[in-house]
Length: 193
Image (cartoon, rainbow, N blue to C red; front, top):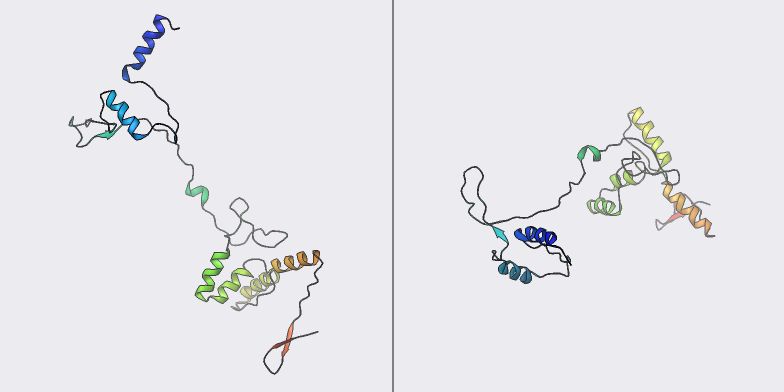
């Protein structure tokens, strides 16, 4: 039961409309809202006629009026921009770390590899996957070549391959690398013992 003051307060509050709540996806349909607007004597579109505050003229079409809740996304370029020439490497894989916080490099993923393969850019691909990534010996050789003014480099074995070999050995599979020193009469490589 409400007393007289509460009823008067409720009546005063209801002058501008009756507040209603409805679930987001399983609530009132558009037809239900239109019917309630018609019952209240309002335009079923839910829009209102507004006037220009400077000229006093009515806008040429009706406008949707209401309250929205807006939050600004805090993603600014100054916080995102990042560049690296040299930096830290992972201890296990010897690949550059990822992310701005670790002063990491840009990931060259599987799809980027496919893109270079599609272009036939074999040398660029080799450089990306060896000396610019986890080829420790090759990194040193490239640095020495740059100091000497030489523009050639020889890619070595990526550390990720060594990690794979160690994982296979942990499963009990013995993996040994053999170098190719000669070819048979058919041009097939013969591994050196």
